[in-house]
Length: 267
Image (tube, rainbow, N blue to C red):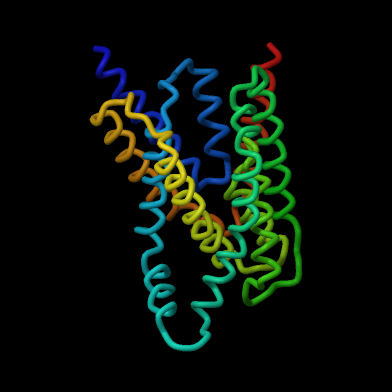
């Protein structure tokens, strides 16, 4: 019975991670809410956390493989081209989160262990709702391409989303739209820019030996597959949703989830 519960917990967290990594509702925030409100807990296990994130990286590569393949082919062509310029913009966008991750990792980890984590997550979900609503109603001058300046500003938004409960995809997509970039281009850029930071974090954990193996191979694989499958579906769904400009529904959801989280902490 215990092993079945372990599998169910792994699949639950995998589904939550896969869906919320791409939808603008904060994966870290929902994982914390699931832990606190549902009483569902896995041992503190970095290897499991890394496995779930690796699954979402793989789902991004699968869904956006034509774009990724085009970038890789362009990278090995002679001279400067559109693909190399795009890759440089992706690298530029990753600098802020790299700095935050290296300089404030301990402080961010401490926030996750705070007794007031539900209140913090709730406040950040309300901020996510405000960003999405603002991006939905704002009408900036449209642009054809994401500039280097825009790439850096979108990267700053991603760095701010290191706060638990502040959606990474919500922050980056909303920022890109407020800057006047095309909906489809912003969604694609948002999902591609997170690949290197996740893989870099995994590499650092491998180097310092912080990965553990207290979760069995079976539950680990179950969580990975659940995260990958739901991640593929969520990534495709989110790209289409951004194209159709329906972010307001996610703003309403985040406002509701944030309110529930704060009330749960208070009462």
